[in-house]
Amino acid sequence: MQLSNAIGLEQGILACAGAGGKTSLLLTLANELMARRQPLLLTTTTKMFFHQVEAFAPLITADYVQGAEFVAQQAGQGQVAAWFAARTGEKVVGLEPDWLARLVAAMPYILVEADGAQQKLLKAPGLHEPVWPEATSLYVGVLNCHAIGKPCTVQYVHRLEHVLTLTGLAAGQLVRLQDVARLAGHPAGIFRGSSGRKVLVLNGWEQGMQDSIAALLTYLREFDQIGIERCVFTTGYASELRVHTVRMLD
Image 1 (cartoon, rainbow, N blue to C red):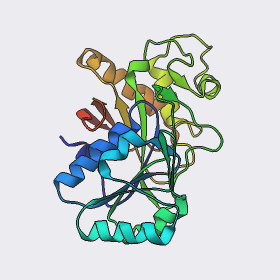
Image 2: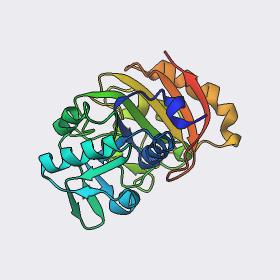
Image 3: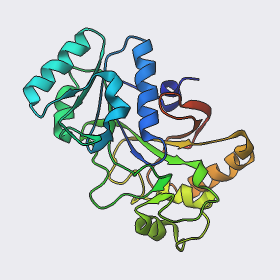
């Protein structure tokens, strides 16, 4: 099953937040859409590494008119438009969230990374995160199963103090299935501030974890206070995220 089908991708703005596979998710979706000759805009409302998007020959400009013309041109040719406002060192800086709502009419698919995680496996957002575009139609939260059984420390966790508060863990305690479920389903968790369809992607899933699916789904249903529609278990990296299974939650 393709990832786009697994998450129920529709035209509009998809914005993702969390840790342990956000960029991989966006790159995989971009490749799937390109294979179908579906035009798309790839960007962020925060920052991304330039090397992750370099292959898309991104436009770097903070001029909205120039960027919007580029997006319309790429859409007309059935191509990818990767657009960022600036480049600082190894990273590109994203677009203003309200710009994306203005681009929906020109570009059928807009893929947005809405927060950062410093390449960690888990996170909980700060008060200023995620930076969701107002017109987002699909919110995707990502967490990584490789965190399960790891100590809850800054080695694996971004914004550790927020994760400890939401999960009730003490620093250094091992991460459990229920802790991942709490980070997904709590109003202050990875979907913080979202207001539409929500899909949870648990990346890093392996066959040896198969017996834990039922337990994890039980925890998700118990702790979900925000209405997660489905949970998609994936594995892989970069543009090769593969779907293991999909489970509906609502």
